[in-house]
Image (tube, rainbow, N blue to C red; front, side):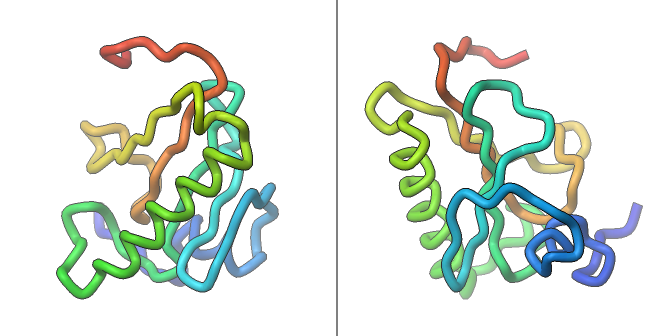
Amino acid sequence: MPEETERDCLFCRIQAGDIPSDPVAQDDLTYAFRDINPVAPVHVLVVPRQHVGHLGAVEPDHAPLVAAMVRTTQVVAAQEGVADDGYRVVINVGRHGGMTVDHLHFHVIGGRPLRWPPE
């Protein structure tokens, strides 16, 4: 399956406002919104505004973008009230890793005790 482009990428279309979302946080480099199929009381996706296919496609010049994603993750955790009790950040890569949208994204999951290993 070929990698998606900005034109047909679900997360690029969400950020552009073509598809509705429930925004949680955003800045010039990132956009965070609630997952439509949450696995916990808090399940927010943090995506870069720039289309990057997956973690394996991250290049050294993406460092500011990845740093911004981490900052937005921290903001989301604080806003959602999970920063003190804990939360999980998940990055899926490829179909075997559970990636369903070919756009780099962090899952911020919390609001209840999480088990390890995940299933």
